[in-house]
View 1 (cartoon, rainbow, N blue to C red):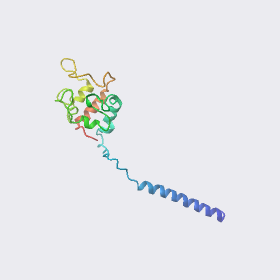
View 2: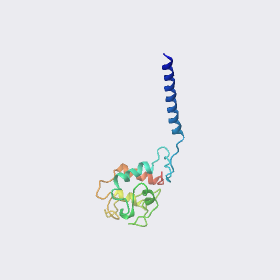
View 3: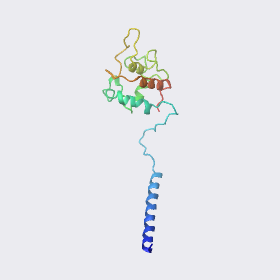
View 4: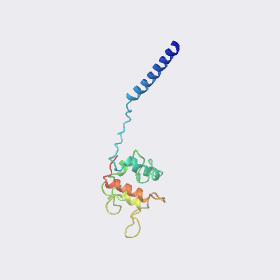
Length: 160
């Protein structure tokens, strides 16, 4: 190999090493921008995550109606509002019931009003206590989706 070729090969190698070093250095020094939002802490193995498991159910089935200032019963279920609008909040239709009563998903016995609305809990009369089953007119949530929401509530309805 001629001296010229060796020289250009060495220069080319040095350039590639420099490009790789700069790329790696730019990755190592980056910090996440502070957007004012708390990071979502992943739940322990096997735990149900509000943001990863429950919110997607609301996104797919509920926010078509329950979004924005005109949301029925003031229940905005978009991701940035849903937890605060549900957990520990009195329902508008039956104020003695909490929309989500952490630790108690029972739909019919002073539990969580949300479960009553999505499961269509029927009392002795064969009629729901208030209003119609949600999502209004269906299709309704699957048994698996309802059970997942109930398990999340029974585990204390964590914001994770």
